[in-house]
Length: 283
Image (tube, rainbow, N blue to C red):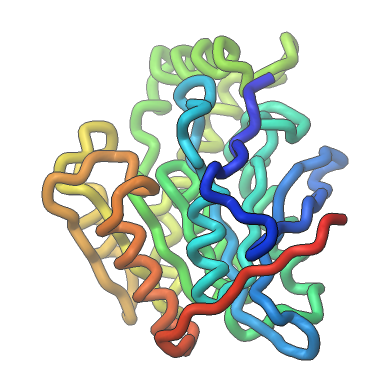
């Protein structure tokens, strides 16, 4: 099993902010996550943001504050923030499967949508790399997602078209523990074909008239910047493309990428330029 995507953030102060440990269910699998809620939460509703991590390339880095640091930052600006481990990652059950990840995100949206403190008209998705691809696919099919930010998002998963690319991904997933069962997937061809189904270039046009921000590094050596341009050209209005000079693939740790996404999301969700506290009660 891979380590948790949610290491303890060393800058975290429980006296100022906190989080609720939550559990989601998708296809009978238990998915673990955390919910960050602005303070005070009594009698108020807030816009919600679901952060979608990418496809792990290796074991977690213990020195990386990870998604909790990002969640705390967005929560402090007025968002209820949900982070969770997709199936096959962290402490969540199951095996890595891109269509399964899409069902996991749908379950996360279901969870947020039933919370009394969530403003149902303001539910945003922000994804990174493979998680961004999943966010596009789900948002295109679920109008509850009111706005979307993609970071280092592929236009398509072209490397899985060949048996060699598919087999290499299976081998990597077994090695790092995102595919855990020896008899998974039941069909290699169907598992590989699912990436073609989810490819964002097939779905991004369906997000309009909801807004989309596409963020990409112009030095991304994993997903070429030309893929961001393809997504932008394929998307309907309103849309924005932001290319970050000198930035690589890991935009979660890029200050320009995060601050741009935060500013854009605050505008899209009509949040005034004030900072709030962040509160969570242990469940």
